[in-house]
Image (cartoon, rainbow, N blue to C red; front, side, top):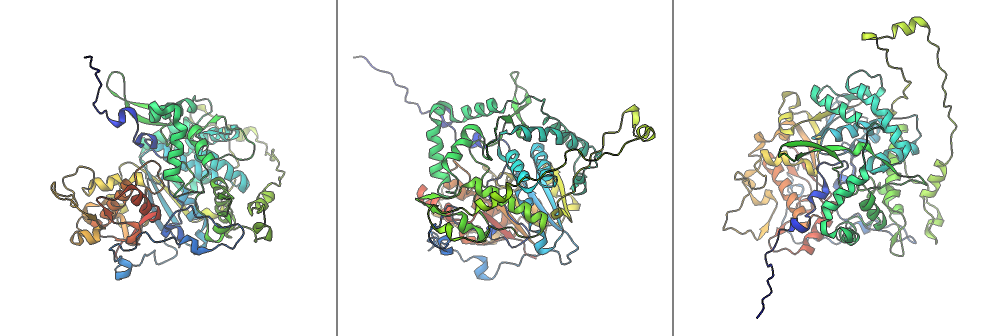
Length: 606
């Protein structure tokens, strides 16, 4: 009898599918959490629950809709707030003392923009320390700072250019030319040979000379003559991610959207998410053509050459499944959120791009004028079909075109001035440009750039007890895990289970092992750099697409263990660090993560 041989061996999932880690990319160009005011009283910092709760267009906005049924009911957790153990956050006593803010792994400057826009509400001086492991991300932060302060453009033009270069792989031709021209000035800025007003707020003194050289090379790569076929490079990344499923990738995008995105951030429209996954274009304005590569997304990563050695490969190594919408497009000020989140026939009246445009416009307007920016007064037409949008009035006001002289008066230069303008080696001094002044919102604001290993950097004496606020991105937590013995497979992990031990319920570390509180504070470089009463905010993976819910909840517990070993007190412990059951179903885990807090926050005891 003939026998049919069938290969019954089970291959590795990575051979025919991806677990999503390669789609996230080797570096982040945008964050996956809403922008925060890291100094003021920002309700978004304590927000919990999904950002997908709409309001009826025919009725009045009911804030009770933001309080869904509590999925944490019955969990054992007496949070430090209830027990009276949560210390009070502190800031420097004198208003002349700057508030030092550390942002590591933030991926962009969304927190800087929101914090600076609200600075005049509390009148404090601000000093931001932006730390990134990749120089390309730091370079994009410099670009964003210049764009936000380019007062020669009106607010709408700044907003459109900022969002285009922030989240699009393909941009307008005018955006590409703008990037190419300003990059030349950035090269001079890195060499301390620039008179650009941005040098008044940008501090490069904490960078090594080799880091400055790398930054200069990054800026030179933004020139319009440097080839960068981002469409082919991104398509190559997509083929590596979808693999055998590349031809049916639209169905997989729909699965990611329905399972991971719609439940938490339903304001993101499926059509826009699909367009981003296919082309990498997230923000489109009016009737512009997006057909020019965004060279600010070019980066290098380490790879193996054909000979087996290590080499640096230039390409697009950013995220291809997580959209840049969460930074500005999935939340809004409570005063405006009810009118922006209205639904009609089960569909949102506005989408994430509308929200992002409004939020960035509001930040820029308040930054320039010092007055909070909100929607115009409510009209009866907003409650009657076809439900007029409150954004239409704002767009009509922005459509007015102002005539600006393109040829400013030039003062003639005589021969003597020309002779004096010659520098060393017979070279002419570069042509002076009349740069526009900085935005008034950046008065008393300083931005310090940092790079390199976070652990070694924060151990320097000049950073001891310096920071009053700190933000750590989800992809920037690994240095903390490593120095506290919490990395995967570490034998020094104090929370590691014995081989024959099975924990039925994993509780927050304050309840699990209270005796370990502050036991490894001397090993934590971040703890040594925080001032008493500082607030530390960690980004969760709540808005990360494709990662399983159990992995997201596990990260929350790892972050809680970091804070517990460092001696910090967690805020809103019950919702920030939900209990995990060993046999928990995936639907239950997704429900807990959906209703959990957006961030995991800690307060440093005095």
